[in-house]
Image (cartoon, rainbow over all chains, first blue to last red; front, side, top):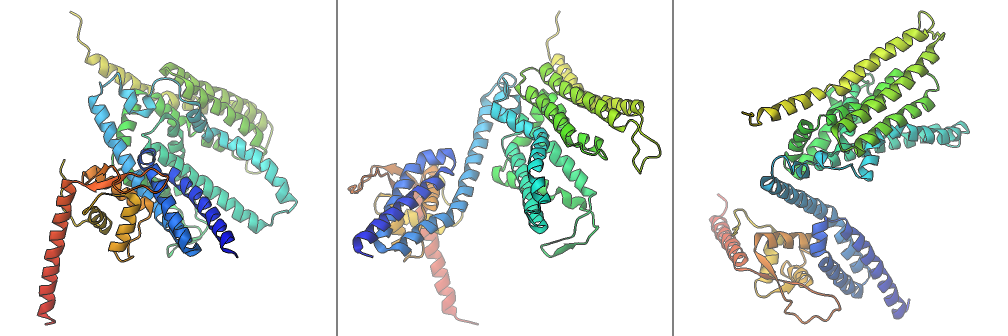
Length: 384
Length: 113
């Protein structure tokens, strides 16, 4: 290769590496990027120019060095940025008035409807089933035609499930870092419910770090490891109990957050209700969509009564439809495990009772709201 | 607020302070100077270098100044200089290392027992 061609090639590689480096720079915390971004670009560009004169190995080494140190630098700078934010939040709170500006410090109490991005994020726990149903409709014919072998399908399925679980943990962790904004409450309720459920589930047989789970062992306390990991990683990063204080403050000032937390468990309640029902996919998708609308209205509401009504409305409508559907489904039907055929009235009555219990549990946190009001009126000056 | 080192400085911090002790320098010059001072053992990436610079700025051991070197590149350069506080921190660390060398030499002179 001629010297000119070699020089041109080095220039092209240098440009590419500089562009890749700029992408890495964007991952740094915003403040760090604003303060040092331009300088770092200039220094890297200078280093790359000098390395290009020495040859391709020197050029590669310069970039690989950046890549090698990038995760460590990122961790240090984000940890520092979160610590700084924590200090600033404490200073802000100390200079704030207690009730009027409390919402600035507690994300879940911010005034006004939630932004649409957060609203959509809050709806995911209910929209997940309809989306999976649609994916299933596309993927099932592929399996039926045996376009993918079973073992490959199992691997793909495992990766998808793992991605979903890890994704759920990451989202829940982000919510914890951000001080429990409104949208994260259903994620945590599902995470806790899932851990409770998995405690009594048998493992398929695993070998992890030298420990063998025999077939038939229950997960037991190990089911809490994912949640434990999320909590430990977050608190190692932020090194403050501020999110816990924000959670307590949020729940104390807005009891509907506890109701929303319970609302987040309704997908599981529905799945249990529709156990042993065949071809339940489409009706479940309808019920989940109705529940997600309740969540949407909740996130966009600005007053307590609006929030409570949204959740109550979502639950009631979904439960009425489920009651009618199941009463119709089980009417006259007898499965092998049933002693007699199903009865419309019996199904409707038991569903109504269950629905009543759900409504009571949903609205039970209202008691906290009353305690809050009473505690505030107690401190008001008496009229003479 | 003056912050004196209560524990040994990291190698990266020590070399950056050493690099700035004779005269202010911009980022790339610090990088190359540290490579020379450490005989090629320490080659900073920009992430590591500027993470250390951020910490030193917050501690008040270095400050930003006008770049004294003529700028032959088309890019804007910012330079850093050691503050009085930084110089005291560097002297404290050098004093600690000197004592360590004296103790080590004395103990080594005793020979194996």
